[in-house]
Length: 403
Image (cartoon, rainbow, N blue to C red; front, side):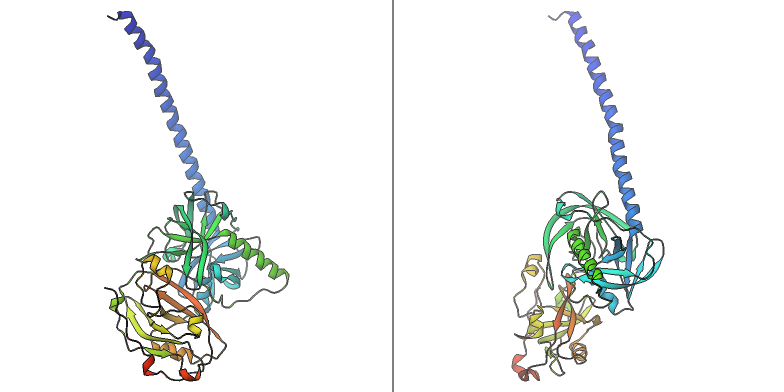
């Protein structure tokens, strides 16, 4: 039997231990709160800097994003955003202060969907710092800033989900930063920054079947931005800056919503560009479904300008990236030529009839349609003698579409 005094000793020893644990836990809570407040204060500070230096880039009826970069205070944006200004009255840059200014393209890197703009007049914002995109790790926190759906000054938060290559119509964009930060149409060209506010990437694309963010967005690494700026500065020093014009061959992957390809109203396939001075070398049919109107390519003639530009028809095997993404394959859908909409084979042929051999044309194409979209540049040539008119045996039957 235990002596009563021993029990009292045990209790008296336990009380200080319990009091110590309670005091230690209470002391930890204020520390955690202070740490959380510090993180939040830093995020707010970064947001204010992004608000000052991120801009909206208005290209005709479309709006993208961009940001001030370098001591020259140039505007960095996506090539596909800058390309849109060629046909809509030029480019206008809108700052958070409310100031608006005309801008011109001075250089670009279409293979990485980048363009550099120069604003006419004073830039009322400081440049953002470029970070080390090679040091980006999966799991680190990131912030995206831009003008989704024209809503200027929108900040979202996420993490780096992966580093990967993204298929595009002109080839591949390599080493992109994948993030789950909410990105929507209009974010294109905006900065993706780390927790210190350094730009580690330029928002370029989302993968979506609904037209909105589904947690899969991509940004071009800042290392490519740094290389482009170095090239532009060398060009300026040599006295040879490119003026405003096309950022030809720019690739874009800004998906819209997935639509059922079975809802189209096809017309008999016909050949594009064989009745005028140039030819494209495709057989296609009119396509109208789910808000899309264009020419669905049925067959691409071997050795044609279209084949050289990477255009594929329904009779061609689906590209690897289409299979990987699970996109129904019915051939490329041509939506426009040089920024002008194409809604039928007749319109496509009419536009091509105004071109001359040796000229280049930018085709706006999509697959899905709308799941993955982009542009590819085609060098037009004179039609071969045997393609002077469509021949019945070259007509192809409309493919059986997946249910």
